Structure formats: structure tokens, C-alpha cells
Length: 307
Image 1 (cartoon, rainbow, N blue to C red):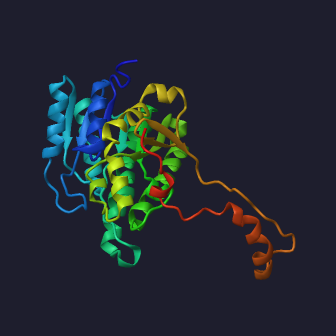
Image 2 (cartoon, rainbow, N blue to C red; image 1 turned 180 degrees about the vertical axis):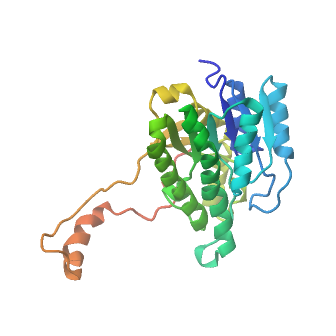
Image 3 (tube, rainbow, N blue to C red; image 1 turned 90 degrees about the vertical axis):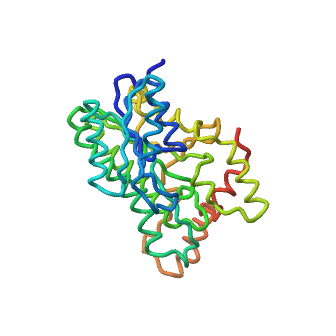
């Protein structure tokens, strides 16, 4: 089943390095024409204006016989997102898939997190995913086909220290993806999420002060960005369309692919006379407490070595 993206045109954001680069390269190898977006900024979102990373990836794609154009806009700018999609249409005639991968980190323990830390991360991850998706949506609607792949994180799905901004953005992306899947199903447009486990430039900025943290980072180094690319690229394919894959949350960890559940009720209690505070304390909470979600963080939950 080679060339699974033959004749498709794909936008990959944050594709100058790491996971984004691997997805752009694989999409091109599978026959897609690729818009390689990268702002060229630092991990914390500071700095911009250098399209060098995106241009280098395009050169790699072209050297291998593929087709690609670079873009240096920021996903946090709605006009920039529109330019990315227009670059696809103007250079290659259409747009078939969007991979929302661009991201930054500004980690702070919550009581030290600034409003700027919060705003910048939300702007890139959540608003950025909306901006690029919205820019492509009308094209998808008119052609009655298209696929979105958004990147979420176990920092949101499970939880982590010092990442309230990042976790909130990544959980927001889950809601965004499901809403797109529901709203655009009538036009054969699909939307899915991937939670990646991989050693990237962003992961390399996470502090490692304890032996356990250092051991975790060493395990992370085994999980290369190339391991994430196949699932993301597959979700853009006609095969994924035929299998009806939409509104799902996948995890990719080394050679494992996981399926995450969505939030649904796990227990309910009823009182025909209504609830008093005392009744809640005596009956409701004891009935529901066995089903409470614990305070484990992502590193404490995914404890097994990458396989």
C-alpha cells in the first residue's frame, strides 16, 4: 500500500524539526505534496522570522524526488494560518490534510505562572490549532473531503506538574477535535488527536533534578520522533477514511499505539427528595469515591519502558 497519500496536499505545522519534520518527510514519501510550516522560534516561543528550518526540510523532500514549499508564519496569527493554507492551494491546487503539531513550552508551577506564560502557550497550541483548522475548513467543505490531525498530550489527558497552560491547551484541543468531527462529518471531514511520546527539543527542556526524572528522560531518548509519524500520516489517508476513523484520541509510544477513552460518566447517584449537604457527605461521596480519578501524573502512570 505504498503512496497512501498520492495526489494529496498536506500542511504540517511546526515541521522544521522533531516530530513535525518526520511527518512532513513521511507524508512526502507517501506521495503527498507538503507545505512545511515552521516559525523558526525558540522552544518558549521567543524569536521568529527564520524560515531556515522549514526550507531545509523542503530541500530534503525535493532531494528525494518530492514536492514541498516552506512557510514561516505563526499559527497564533489567523492571517498567517490563512497564508499557510493558501500556499497549499496556490502551489498545489488544493488542501487535503492539516497536521497541527506546532507548539511551545513555558513551564511554571501554577502560583508562579505569569499571564504571559498562559497566553503564549494557549495562543500557539489551542488558538493555533483553531486558526489553521478554520483556514482549511471551507476548502474541505467544498470538496467534501479532508482530515485534521491535532496533537494533544498526556500532560492534559493524565496530568503533570508545572504545565497548567500546556495541559489546559491540550485538553482544549480534545474538545476542538471532537467538535470539528461532529460539525463536519456531513462533509466527509475527519478530525483525530495524537498524544505523542517522543524525545524532542521541547522535551529536552524539562528539568531533571532527581534520579527518577533523569531515568525518565533517558527512557524518552529511546522514543524517536520518527516513531510518531506513521500513525499521523495514516490518519490522513483514504484508508483511514474508509475505516471511519474520526473523533478518536490515539497515543504513540515507541512501538505501541494506544487508544484513549473520552470523558464519560462512570458513576451516578440519585436522591428523589434532592440533596442536602449532609446527604452528599453521607451518601453521594462514599458511593462515588471509589471511582474518583487519582492525582497521579503522566510520568507515574506510564512507568513501563518503551517497547
